[in-house]
Length: 323
Image 1 (tube, helix red, strand yellow):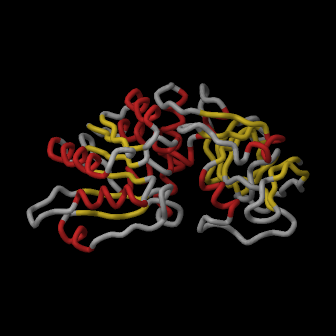
Image 2: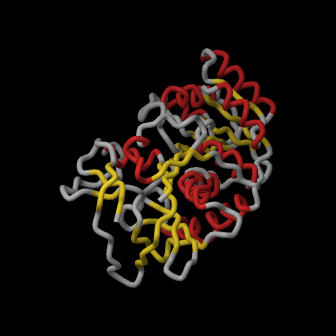
Image 3: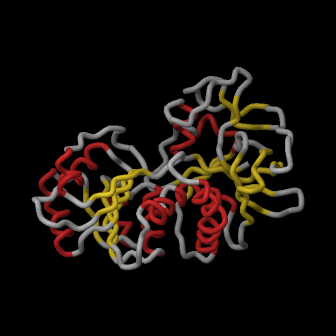
């Protein structure tokens, strides 16, 4: 079969011939792959920079972690891969497989799951979002940030504040549910002043952070209390696009009612992952099929994987490989 293969960490995936995977046990099934999204997670694994990266395989490794494909009986499904999925055939787990509704394209379905996991899991399980709450999304101009806006609104958020650097994309977020935008291109004083004004009128309940780095330091510093009772804030780190570390004063943690946690691979419980596949993803696929969840996609053919791997994809779009 043809597949996207790497032989050393950090190299570009090659369009190459690779042995077709073989089913090993009753929980595995082979699917004919139709579409696979390329995510920041996949790029981190390929580069060797993500904490879940595996050791090199001198015989080559097929990349990709999930896929939309077709079973032998014709059923169209989304599934997590047991091995690499950017290939003509892939082994997937039966208990992490979801039949897709009519009305959603292969590319659209493939683009969604990583972003749903990167937003809904944080909102539902770490933040335990309640209807009527105010949500701040730090770094909302990317694909997952845009998904987070819509899912937060679906879960009942009353007000959604978003930050980012791309002015054009920031403005477009107002059309999908954002209520107020904060440009990170402003100076620090202007950003903090805007945050304080928002906090006075509609106290922030939940912060989803896809950036970390300096913008996280600014947000955490603005939350610092002065010895009075403070509004409880649940701050969830999901990504680190602006840097992996921050400076955090202990006085911030002592002066505000702050829950600081992370949401990502390894932080979820088995029960939470079961709910992702049994409830959350099916609900989001149905919303998308009904055009109640918007996504921006750019597609590329499998044969062009090496050329397309490092292409600059416009802000807010997800690159999907069509097989």
